[in-house]
Length: 98
Image: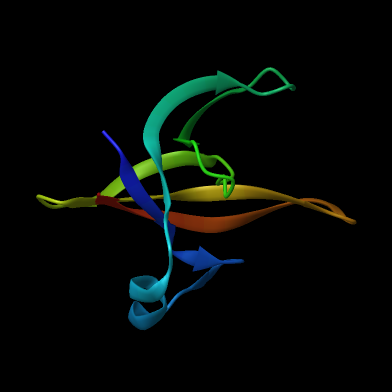
């Protein structure tokens, strides 16, 4: 099933409803799986398997926060690598049926 996935937060700041409605989502299949990190820990992650160029980073430890007939919401955190190392930001996905 193809979904349009929109990121709900930008570096931990929640987007406004207007920003969310105007945002173009990444179209793809959303899958939740358990993966093993390089340090040996097992974590849950959601991935959006997309055929478009705008791929989303994985959503770690996703939780279902809302569901309706045509959409669902997932929240977790995303990993961002910067000059200081790795930073974790709160992230959510608004997944709408295409």
